[in-house]
Amino acid sequence: MSNTDYDPIVARATAAGRGGIGIIRVSGSTQALSVICEALFPGKVLKPRTAFLLPVRSAAGDLIDQAVVLKFQGPHSYTGEDVLEIQAHGGPAVLQMIQSRVLEVGAAVELRLAEPGEFSKRAFLNGRMDLTQAEAVADLIDAGSASAARAAARSLQGVFSQKVYEIAEHLTNLRAYVEATLDFPEEDIDFINDGRVARQVDDILKELTYLEKRALYGKVLRDGLTVVMAGAPNVGKSSLMNALAQNEVAIVTDIAGTTRDRIEHDIDLDGLLIHLIDTAGVRETDDPVEKIGVERTLQAVETADVVLTLVDGTDKTAVSDTAQTWIRNRLREGVTEVLVMNKIDLGVDQGKIPDGAVCISAKTGEGIDALLEKLKKISGNDIDFEGNFSARTRHLTAIAKAKSHLIQVQESLQSMTLELVAEELRLALNELGTITGQILPDDLLGIIFSKFCIGK
Image (cartoon, rainbow, N blue to C red; front, side, top):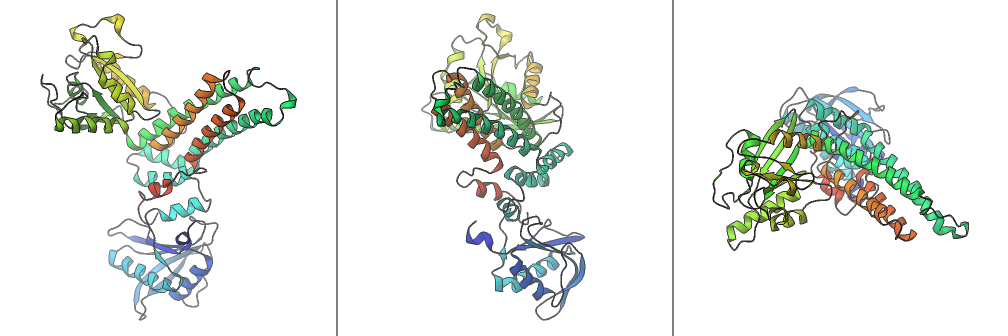
């Protein structure tokens, strides 16, 4: 923690605007809180976890409000530090006067206004919760549905973290197993050729794959599923957008390059929120405006949960065109790409349909239901997960990277040295550590907590 992390902080903990009750929250060291409490409530001993009805007065002694005052002693508090809560009437003027008064008396101990998410950040830094639990605080506040709220509450209770810790423990044991061979070569135990490493890697990959599915569903509960339609010009992206939206939300013409910018529309798929994004066609072009549209398409691909790569089923070169190469080069790890062959109403050579492709006609509607079912399956909406939890894009990326390191071991086990196996296992462990906050990439905390509201 930096020096500023030790400063006592204050902020309004309830939402802005009028309300029956508003809360001013202070967190800091025992010494700092003692100075503040004595200045606000002279001679009053505040027993921890006991409510007191006390007057809050200005420097001149004028009554600001009668408030319920609670003190929580660290480390048994939200932040792990001593915490003071002043629960007053929820008028903006009253709360502002109380906060100003607290800042005034707290100047002696360098009390300052809290930054967004700083109370939760301190809870994380002081070991009161891990990073997924801290993120769940914001998710619970922002939940837009009962399902999302329940999922966030489970993450706050540690359901997601516990699964990550369990898999990390299995990885740690496997890594120790491998490194034992490196440290004690005289034992002459060949863990690779006897199949034990391969079996354990396979088991851990299965655990990660299941966790990934649950995390994606948790992310969908939180944010919805972002589906980007991409491909070359005139393959039917805008027609598919209209078919899925069941509305004319995008302009459709026979002129290549009609769509120059992204078009967004939300649909409800059996309770699943899907953010549809139609994009400009991807191709080489000298048109400066079209170039901007192509780059925006590729930027949309980078933020997608699912990319529907459309091809013209009547075009014999479509499956290996430039657009697909550009699109795949911009996919994040763990993102699902679905190849969609459009215009099957015009005839498609069945022998040339790639495995996993979905064949549709955006014009007639053929295959649209199958595509929607595919999206439900990808999101996990077709699986009855017990104990859903909330998750975020960064969690999915970390799980995907951990899997890629294990897949590297799985595919190259016979040719890899034990040192390389141990290193890939270490890298996989580090990726899982970023989920819970045991490993902290540069600026990760700043990025996460800056999106919290002030007072949390």
